[in-house]
Length: 299
Image (cartoon, rainbow, N blue to C red; front, side, top):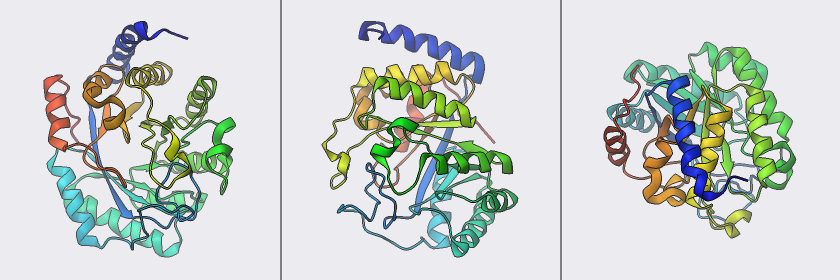
């Protein structure tokens, strides 16, 4: 295991690989929880699961004006991607119709690329979303195959992999992320890297566990900042050309070292709030990129 004293050297190497393979630009994305809480799945990290007693309660699908307002705010920050996220196992017919409608409206009104995260898909659903103009579909593996059963019991790892395969087959870009710090071993994190490589994503969000009250993982502590940097760098070295996106938990894990992640392999970030937790002020991220002289990707 590389000692902590060598992590910054590893980060420097990862940054060189990122610039060489993916260029200097940074993609900025905003996400919106358009249907929050009440999810029937038992993902042990998630406060939106109906299985656990948390502060997050089920709410109905946001109306079109609310979704469009969030998309316009995202556009104003210079973002190119807007992701509509639903707390569901997978979309039913009514939800599919709503997502297709919103994809057209948001795209026409803002010009943003529209991404969707709505759980497990059938092959037909993937092709239907692609035909409606969905640019990217998010479906995280979260953790390795060997650790998955410790985190989720209501669906299988293979179901997640199948959805990822349907997304790419349908012609959408695949966003497939990870969540580090749930109790997995070093070996299982390395296994996860190979699992991610096997589904060939264009984007990999790196999330760090932010333990939520009421969930089984509330007992976990956030991983250390240098440990986060180590794994950002390792994911970049293993996935040299992907969009490696700063996502949930970076604020509590890295605190004042968030800029360091941008020079350790990160080349995309979510700005603003997450699904049920607050991010930092978007302008701080925009200023961070300006200070680092990292241009924001434009459409």
